[in-house]
Length: 124
Image 1 (cartoon, rainbow, N blue to C red):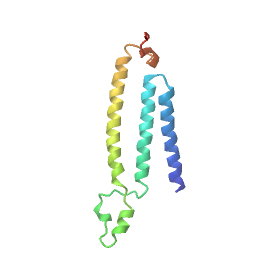
Image 2: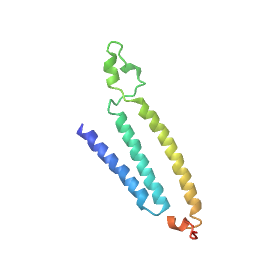
Image 3: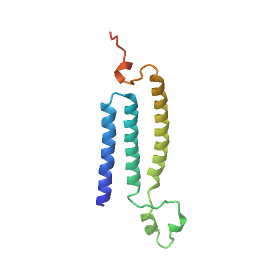
Protein backbone atom coordinates (compact mmCIF):
# COMPACT_ATOMS: atom_id res chain seq x y z
CA UNK A 1 0.00 0.00 0.00
CA UNK A 2 2.93 2.33 0.64
CA UNK A 3 4.05 1.93 -2.99
CA UNK A 4 0.68 3.17 -4.24
CA UNK A 5 0.85 6.17 -1.91
CA UNK A 6 4.34 6.98 -3.21
CA UNK A 7 3.13 6.72 -6.81
CA UNK A 8 0.18 9.00 -5.98
CA UNK A 9 2.56 11.54 -4.47
CA UNK A 10 4.88 11.46 -7.48
CA UNK A 11 1.96 11.82 -9.89
CA UNK A 12 0.56 14.76 -7.94
CA UNK A 13 4.00 16.38 -7.93
CA UNK A 14 4.16 15.95 -11.71
CA UNK A 15 0.73 17.58 -12.05
CA UNK A 16 1.83 20.42 -9.79
CA UNK A 17 5.04 20.88 -11.80
CA UNK A 18 3.01 21.09 -14.99
CA UNK A 19 0.61 23.59 -13.44
CA UNK A 20 3.41 25.83 -12.16
CA UNK A 21 5.10 25.65 -15.56
CA UNK A 22 1.82 26.70 -17.15
CA UNK A 23 1.58 29.70 -14.84
CA UNK A 24 5.20 30.83 -14.72
CA UNK A 25 6.55 30.37 -18.23
CA UNK A 26 6.19 33.19 -20.76
CA UNK A 27 7.07 31.16 -23.87
CA UNK A 28 4.01 29.68 -25.59
CA UNK A 29 5.79 26.46 -26.57
CA UNK A 30 6.86 25.88 -22.96
CA UNK A 31 3.28 26.50 -21.83
CA UNK A 32 2.04 23.77 -24.18
CA UNK A 33 4.77 21.45 -22.93
CA UNK A 34 3.79 22.14 -19.31
CA UNK A 35 0.16 21.48 -20.16
CA UNK A 36 1.15 18.14 -21.70
CA UNK A 37 3.01 17.19 -18.50
CA UNK A 38 -0.05 18.08 -16.45
CA UNK A 39 -2.40 16.06 -18.69
CA UNK A 40 -0.05 13.08 -18.59
CA UNK A 41 -0.01 13.21 -14.80
CA UNK A 42 -3.81 13.25 -14.66
CA UNK A 43 -3.95 10.26 -17.02
CA UNK A 44 -1.44 8.40 -14.84
CA UNK A 45 -3.51 9.21 -11.75
CA UNK A 46 -6.64 7.76 -13.35
CA UNK A 47 -4.75 4.63 -14.38
CA UNK A 48 -3.44 4.24 -10.83
CA UNK A 49 -6.91 4.67 -9.37
CA UNK A 50 -8.34 2.09 -11.79
CA UNK A 51 -5.65 -0.42 -10.81
CA UNK A 52 -6.44 -0.31 -7.09
CA UNK A 53 -9.11 -2.99 -7.24
CA UNK A 54 -7.11 -5.28 -9.53
CA UNK A 55 -4.84 -5.48 -12.52
CA UNK A 56 -6.74 -7.82 -14.81
CA UNK A 57 -8.93 -6.63 -17.65
CA UNK A 58 -12.67 -7.20 -17.09
CA UNK A 59 -13.17 -8.63 -20.58
CA UNK A 60 -11.32 -11.89 -19.91
CA UNK A 61 -14.00 -14.57 -19.51
CA UNK A 62 -11.72 -17.24 -18.05
CA UNK A 63 -11.44 -15.23 -14.83
CA UNK A 64 -15.16 -15.29 -14.25
CA UNK A 65 -15.84 -18.37 -12.12
CA UNK A 66 -19.58 -19.13 -11.86
CA UNK A 67 -19.05 -20.91 -8.53
CA UNK A 68 -17.43 -17.88 -6.85
CA UNK A 69 -18.59 -14.65 -8.53
CA UNK A 70 -17.24 -12.43 -5.75
CA UNK A 71 -13.70 -13.72 -6.11
CA UNK A 72 -13.41 -12.94 -9.81
CA UNK A 73 -14.66 -9.37 -9.49
CA UNK A 74 -12.10 -8.61 -6.76
CA UNK A 75 -9.23 -9.19 -9.20
CA UNK A 76 -10.58 -7.06 -12.05
CA UNK A 77 -9.70 -3.47 -12.81
CA UNK A 78 -12.46 -0.89 -12.96
CA UNK A 79 -13.34 -0.35 -16.67
CA UNK A 80 -14.95 3.10 -16.32
CA UNK A 81 -11.70 5.03 -15.65
CA UNK A 82 -10.10 3.12 -18.52
CA UNK A 83 -12.77 4.37 -20.92
CA UNK A 84 -12.41 7.90 -19.59
CA UNK A 85 -8.65 7.71 -20.04
CA UNK A 86 -8.94 6.64 -23.68
CA UNK A 87 -11.16 9.63 -24.33
CA UNK A 88 -8.85 11.97 -22.42
CA UNK A 89 -5.80 10.79 -24.35
CA UNK A 90 -7.48 11.38 -27.71
CA UNK A 91 -8.81 14.81 -26.73
CA UNK A 92 -5.48 15.83 -25.18
CA UNK A 93 -3.55 14.78 -28.26
CA UNK A 94 -5.86 16.70 -30.59
CA UNK A 95 -5.72 19.84 -28.43
CA UNK A 96 -1.94 19.66 -28.27
CA UNK A 97 -1.69 19.25 -32.06
CA UNK A 98 -4.00 22.22 -32.60
CA UNK A 99 -2.02 24.37 -30.17
CA UNK A 100 1.27 23.47 -31.85
CA UNK A 101 -0.14 24.44 -35.26
CA UNK A 102 -1.31 27.78 -33.85
CA UNK A 103 2.06 28.37 -32.19
CA UNK A 104 3.83 27.58 -35.46
CA UNK A 105 1.73 30.23 -37.20
CA UNK A 106 2.39 32.71 -34.39
CA UNK A 107 6.13 32.06 -34.68
CA UNK A 108 6.03 33.87 -38.02
CA UNK A 109 4.99 37.05 -36.20
CA UNK A 110 7.38 36.73 -33.26
CA UNK A 111 9.98 33.93 -33.24
CA UNK A 112 10.52 34.37 -29.48
CA UNK A 113 6.90 33.30 -28.79
CA UNK A 114 6.72 35.54 -25.73
CA UNK A 115 3.18 36.05 -24.41
CA UNK A 116 3.65 39.79 -23.90
CA UNK A 117 4.49 40.37 -27.56
CA UNK A 118 1.00 39.23 -28.61
CA UNK A 119 -0.89 41.50 -26.22
CA UNK A 120 -2.30 44.75 -27.62
CA UNK A 121 -0.18 47.77 -26.67
CA UNK A 122 -2.81 50.50 -27.06
CA UNK A 123 -5.25 50.33 -24.18
CA UNK A 124 -8.03 52.89 -23.71
